[in-house]
Image (cartoon, rainbow, N blue to C red):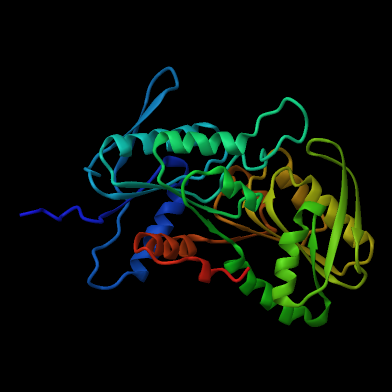
Length: 331
């Protein structure tokens, strides 16, 4: 008789940096599951730290034959990426049937091409590392560029924050009626903003940006009707917030009634919190793919956090049950 106890068993784990998010995902999955299905729990994954800075993940239960979902965003420090890679390797060596890396924020994604001589393509290198570690599939959200999916030699389940953002944008549209306008903070974000605008039937403003050097904006020129408009800037990442705040300030100077921002990944490095707090932005909507810095709590008055836990919970269950996910995302 063949023992089928481990047949198609789900095992859900998280690395340390994304535990806050994984716990919300588990809670959501338990709300969504059928009553006869077993409760979803986070499996025990312990990380032993050594005095020289090395660390070693270790599973405290069997994963043999299981479909393992390992949740970890790869925001700084690089230890977060290394912990994920080691956890994937450990699961494969423990005879997991499949390992699916759930990376809400895929770090290094902005290094997706050679934009100057003699530089690396970090997004491709990380994809290779995930493959070598033993990843069978990836689940991530709002990659910096859609074509990054082509860097992977295994399936990519690409989720979009648009599912969660559109509901809020429709409420703003009812509030502002005919004055709501969507804006791209730079030319690279035009495609993303046009997708939202097509769904909401709103006009678009494109901000033309020139840089003095990396992370330093020299000049921003809005293209489109600004005066008397309530503008929402759409982006995928807020890093130092230089582009975002300069764009917001320039839009207000040119007669905009209000400026808000929606961005999926709140990297928020350097002076980002201070810049946003002092800027013309009235609200900044971000998701919980990266946690806000608790040390900067006094500077977070303009932030509104939109949780993607329910979205990831639904998609994990769909992927686990071999169901399509594309119908879930309108953009």
